[in-house]
Amino acid sequence: MKALRIVFLLLLVVVAGSYAYWVQTAPGIPVSRTIMNSEGQSLEVVIVGRMGQTLHFDRTSDGGRYELAFGKLGWKDRIFAERLPEQAPPPVVVKEEDQPSDPYIASRRQRIGELQQKKTEFIAEIKSGSLNNILARKRQEDLVSLEKEIIDLQGAIDAYVSRTGNK
Image (cartoon, rainbow, N blue to C red; front, side, top):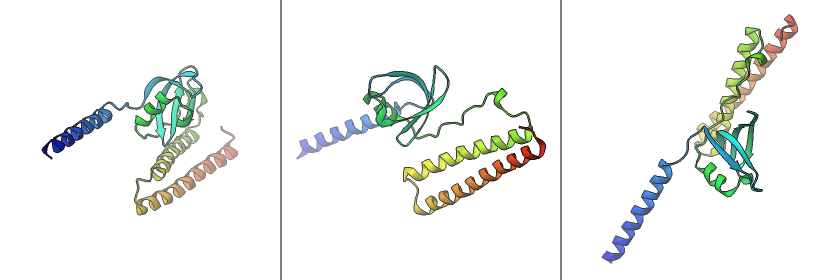
């Protein structure tokens, strides 16, 4: 009986140590990596986010933002992606020449981007299932109000453009 207890404790120590190592060595975001899909094609990327079973990345060759489901990754990259923390990707940086010159429009578009980021984070929280019922309902209400504010801001931009002719 004593030997069985010792074996159990040793097994427990090994499992706890393995788990601690697994958690301590988890990669952070952003991370540069060559990922491979299930057909063996590779791609140089900078992983900028993970939401659920979707990986968000910027392709190194053209800087474009893309997303890929874990099921389309090779097995090594799928394990790597599972270890990444759940984190919404940052908003796409717009080049200065693409930004409107009018500060009114620029400020409203910036606010829309911030609200969309917040909306993405709330959706991820709701889908994760980690919220209690009250907080989940609150997040649903917040999503509705965020969507209304985005629509109002876009309407304000459209009205301003039609009045002034600025873009």
